[in-house]
Image (cartoon, rainbow, N blue to C red; front, side, top):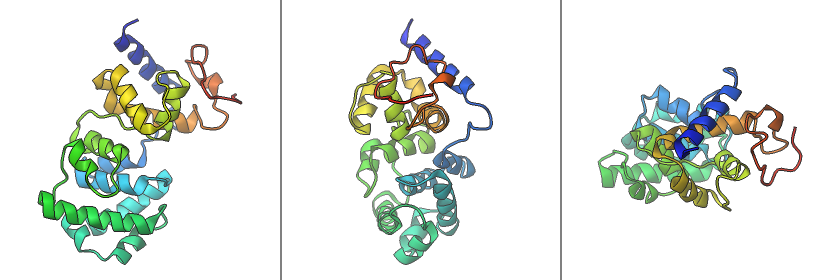
Amino acid sequence: MSDKEYWNRIFHEFRSALSDEVRVLPSVSLIAQETENDPFAVLVSTVISLRTKDEVTLSSSRRLLDAAPDAAHLAAMDEAAIQALIFPCGFFKRKAHQLKTIAQTLVSRYGGKVPSSQQELLSLPGVGIKSANLTLNLGFNIPAICVDCHVHQIANRMGWVNTKTPEETVTALESIMPEEYWIPLNELLVSYGQNICRSLSPLCSRCPENNRCPKNGVGKHR
């Protein structure tokens, strides 16, 4: 089986295993839809999303973007006001400082626009590889692999990679996965990880790859 045939099968099987009721887009993807894939909105919501539940990310991002729809407005806001808008997202005080600093940097260095290169995105305060790649994906439609906890865990469970960190997983997946799958990977595996290949006691009996999956690192499963 060719690489493309394998990945076609995986994506088809995983999508088919998810019912319409649970195939919900992650919060950052929803923000991207609502803002017509505005790179600034995507970047802001990715920063807010770190260590934060989807429903909190969504509401916090909407409040902040309503008040500050672009970098100039956000750069001019007081940090306390940003904190109040994004609360109760995780580490809201630190993120408020990062968001204001990012906005100031965008205004001073990039004319208020979000840069479209990974290297430039990674130079922004508080922006790691996950946030940078997700901004490239959803804000610019540039192929990049976004690895969160679900992608990292499923990729290792399935035996696609053998890595210790999400950063290592990005590089490993880039070497084996055709580029056309890079953008949809995150959205699919987030839903799959939330509903079937869960962190604790995954529902392996519902997974079409049950008999082929090596279940690396899996203890109890159903």
